[in-house]
Image 1 (cartoon, helix red, strand yellow):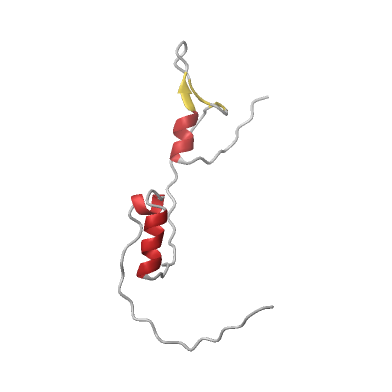
Image 2 (cartoon, one colour):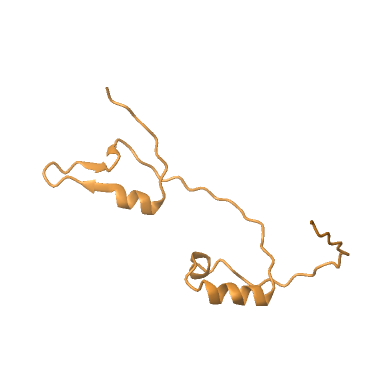
Length: 92
């Protein structure tokens, strides 16, 4: 019995799983015969992450090859921070 299954893959996963038969020219994936595929672009928004310059410098020094650095996701933004009195509690 034939079964159709929808599989979501990243671009890298898809490109690593696709192959073409040398004898028949049929295109398949490691999961079986490919019937149909389409690209689905999804967008999302992430709330900004606030960090001090020293924390950012430490992150850059410890993980210089991190994907968020190589893809230049980090950007400096000037913001005004309202002073809020904080209370701290120590849990024993």
